[in-house]
Image 1: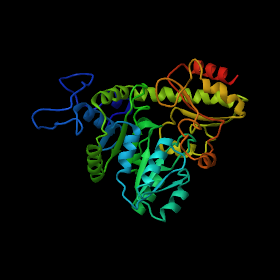
Image 2: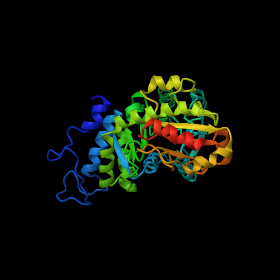
Image 3: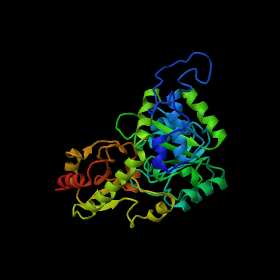
Image 4: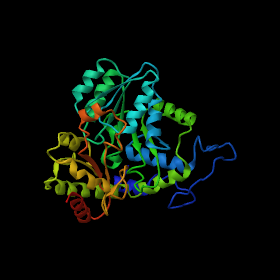
Length: 371
């Protein structure tokens, strides 16, 4: 395994076709001959190349790519059966919450807990659980889970440990090396990085889990298309470079926000005062490009909701453009009010995904929005 900077560029060394530098798109549904490839729902050379590269970056043996991040999570939840119990982050993406609610109707119990406190996880595991699902850092409150500690707890209780690694990517964090059983990504975000495709990924080491995920993908028919696989492959080439720039801009913007009298709090795990800073410093090589902040006065929210010339008001994250999101009415609107309030999602909270623009230009645009 090369350094991540190099690995992103060279990809799967053995996956070239006809000596091509850029991977070709096998835009076909069917193959003749009954060989390795027969039907694209089952497998496709472009998708295989992407899966191999994501597996390499995550330090996993097997990767599977899906039509969206939620399709990837759906496939992981499809491992469960009636009567199973799942411990899941209480602070998490609203789409994952909706997915959990849907599976709850199938007789699967989901208990929402603060995964930033390992003691909570240990206490909940005493009542039995088939799976623990954690975001780290969480969306949008940026809580940090001690992945190695939770992995050890899961192993001792026979639970599958799943980590959503979307915010940090394999360039900054590798949960499998910390003991996780499954890593999921919304590849729509940083892995693609260009605001132009939907994709998801699941990475595992265990052969039995790999066989089950493969069967689920084949059965549900939710695998990623050849063209979208190619778009994510293109994004991987600059992933390491982009993550460093996203992070640099995040640190710079934190200073701007901390020095503004319009801001009550800034939440970013790269800040020494963040509760999970020391844990993340020990288990990750970076802190990502997402910053959450709270306004002092809700009256200032209206200007932010309009967006700026550089910072656009939009729901996604992880692309080349800086995007500001209002979790209350966007990403977390489906989460019950009492749960949002307990977590800290209110009408003064915003999530900012730093893009690749010049840091001074981003700062000036933010100051205009706050003025």
